Length: 88
Image (cartoon, rainbow, N blue to C red; front, top):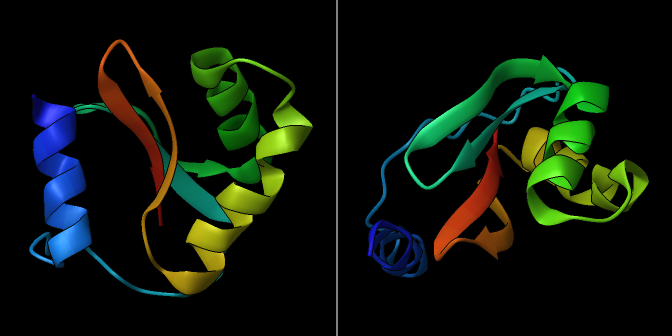
């Protein structure tokens, strides 16, 4: 249910998280309410996304960079009924 609530909040704009587009090449990886990586470099971010969502790390590079450059949360996949996302 947390993932559904987060998704609804993201769609309605009700989630008021940090939204800064500094493009520093670092991001957080979150699964549901668990922060797996905080302020990590892109290579670690993409590896963690591959661990959580499956596939190759290189396939997540564009989404990780998008979160970093736009300052917005980017949803990557759903695992165990909860959202996995990247945030700046």
